[in-house]
Structure formats: C-alpha cells, structure tokens
Image 1: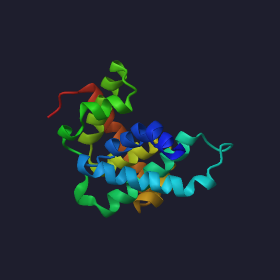
Image 2 (image 1 turned 30 degrees about the horizontal axis):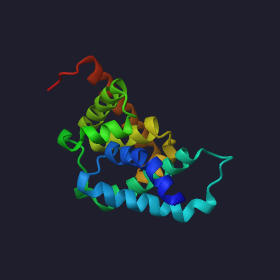
Image 3 (image 1 turned 120 degrees about the vertical axis):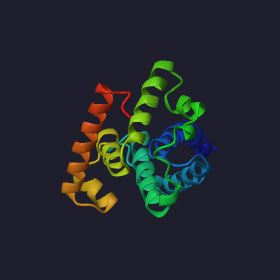
Image 4 (image 1 turned 30 degrees about the vertical axis):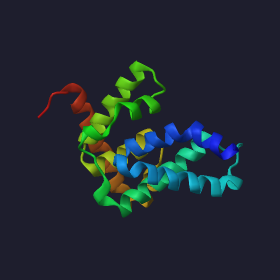
Length: 166
C-alpha cells in the first residue's frame, strides 16, 4: 500500500523526466517501471537528512533515463513535438496553465537543439549536475561538457531573440 502511494504521488514527476529527455511515449511506462523498481530496491539507502525524497528519486530517474538513452538510442525523439502530449505536460506542470505554457516552450527549445547540447544543458541547468558528473554519465570529456553547455546557452539565447528561426 505504501509503495502504491509513493508511486501515485511521484509518477507525474518521473513522467516529466522521461518527457524532458525525449523518451518515446510507448517506452515511458517501461522506463518508469525501471526507475520505481530501482527506487524501491534502494529505499533503505535513502537518507532524509541529505535530500528530500523527490530530489533523491529525481537523481535515480535522471541516471536511469540516461542509461536507457545510451542503450536505446533509436528510441529517442528529440525533434517531434507530436510526442509531447498535453496530458503529460499537465501532469508534470501541476495543472497551472501558465506553468504548462512555459514548460512546453522549454521542451520545444530543448527538442530543437542538437542532441549533445540538449543532454548537457538539461543535466547541468535543469538537474544541477556538475561538468564532471555529466562527463562521466555521457562518456565525454569535461571540456566537451563545458563546450556543449556554452553552445546550448547560445542556442537558447538565439531562440529567445529569434523564435521564428528557420
């Protein structure tokens, strides 16, 4: 019963991670299952003095999603907005219309970026990983992480200045 309550309470957040990293809709359920299975197995190692449960679960979700992306490269959809369903956005954005619009704009911008920029930007800016952690996660150098982040920031800035670019 307690596991179901945890699942029900945090599945929207985990779904948001899957959406943000371009996991195709048909594969989100599988990945969510993997994430929660790992979280439940690791629950005894959770330390509330170090992080909130949501932060701890988010770390597991991001790590498993990156691992999933590495092993299922053909399942990543970084370009197609048709896979961002309104119901998914509403779940992740707490049903606040303004928040949903900002979240959708962010997803659109991220999904238009080249994949290497997008992953580094998401991990650094959104998730709070260091360049060293990103380098380890993505099997790249720290310098490549920094360069990709710089290029991603320029991409975002250009998108905001010229939102109708071709």
